[in-house]
Image (cartoon, rainbow, N blue to C red):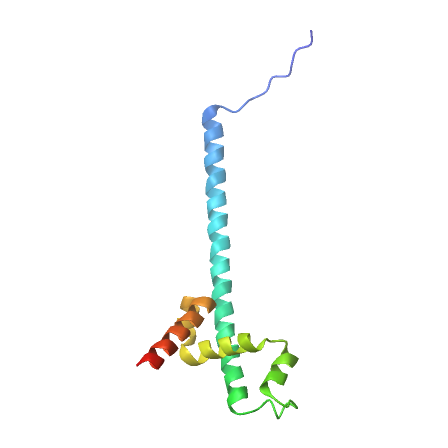
Length: 123
């Protein structure tokens, strides 16, 4: 009968070390990815704030007419931005600082603007 080649099978301690190292690498990777996502969300919210600020100026000063549009809504259609989305961004930009909006995130920032408006109406 032929002899089987001798293998150096890892010991249970080596396996445990390998698994621990793999977990650490996954943890580091997971933290890095989460940090990237949070950074992207912060940038997205800041961008929404800037777009909302620009849209507020275009609407308030009727600059859409200088761009050849009959209405602000027509301008939005040309941009490919929905009316309610545009007004949501405008509300964020006109109610909160860019830093505060970035701290909250887009949805929470918009909800904060709605809360402020409700309080103003009730007082």
